[in-house]
Length: 558
Ligand code: ADP
Image (cartoon, rainbow, N blue to C red):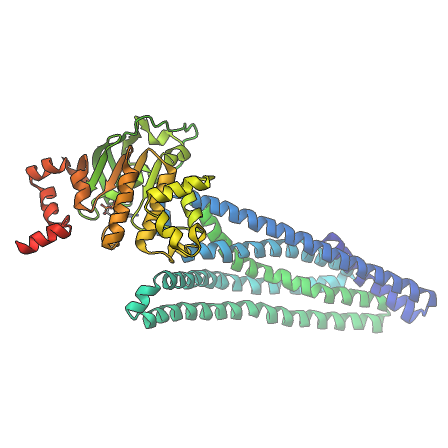
């Protein structure tokens, strides 16, 4: 950058000799000498511009890459509530579009403050050396331009912030359309979605136009002021040369420097506007980087040692926001037994799972596994010992084999097949055209609900963790899939501590202990027979909720 600036100054400086020695004094030998000097100056300028650009771009790329890695690390560390707060579109925009804003800031700061500022300084030095009085004249006009530009900055900043929000909205709507396309079509929501999208697109369009209008204004502003400056210099300089016999070469060198300074000076004047446009984006990146992580690993965390696999919640309270989700819950899941959680939706059953996985820390009370407080154990060891099977089975976009192998990284082929067999999945997998190498599609879209479930169970089988958290699939499956899934689950539960959010009558009947939860409290606990005998919520739910086909027929008959 220094070389670029110096050669720029040099090319203005040499004008003096070009005019004086070649055109006025007509020295023939100087023609070659000066031509040679001009070639050297421009070669140096070209090479150094090239070097500067390459180095700068590499630095920029390295900074973006490290920012993206840091942000993704941070996102992985966040608790689940973070993902409910930030829509996918918002995160995607911040990570891609706004990372580009960071690179623009780097480019702007480095190029403008480095090359342009140095060039302006070098050219100003040439001007001052050639004619100090005229330089003063020019410098008086400059501050006017700066003040004009500064007033535009604030407006651009506000509009820019709004534009980023609209862009995030476009991405979110797009994602909603992609994931919810069945519902969109089935409920004829196309025109509704089109209207939402059109609104966001319109917003972005209007705001982009507004930004363009404001930031384009800086150009003409500088242009007009530049015209005045050049005119003033010509009037004064012309008079100086014509009437007072001043040095013509010096005047040309001055005016060359002035004209050459114009572009970099213009860029410098616009720097503020452009910086602010991009800094809004960068600020939202840092929002993510600085977002506090709610649940962090203790610095002296030790590995969880599971001997029996007893999970306990002791007088646990927890709240997502202001309203409590769990309120004094005490619960004991015994080794090699099935503990069922039942109760109306919103009762806090899923929250219990989240606390056992330590996705969150309790507000008060304590969660332990074999007597070890979860707050003192490492995340890795805790989650290695727990297998989670949820209703909304999530599969990664990859092959079936890969999806099962996530349960145990580096698992051997026969272990994977064994797990699939135990999960009642081997048969349907081998019937697929690609077998274990079949791609499941994004979110497992190429497979049926029951098939996805069985792959998830195979994953849990492979993990072979002593503690199993199971959110029972409800009516999402047809009868045949359900019985296959159920068989697989029964196999999975053997010799483990199983905590199950139960929806099926047979599960609760066979459970060793049932906890009935409502509004964040355990209302009743005991075996099926005990709870039926006691009456109350369980007996009531039993009639309402756990009516399998046989019970339903009975109810109809009655
Ligand atoms: P269940 O699994 O029994 O249906 P949950 O544990 O999901 O119940 O919910 C318990 C309570 O916590 C409910 O009142 C629910 O609205 C609230 N809740 C659950 N998840 C969140 C969340 N991520 N943010 C805010 N509130 C939540």
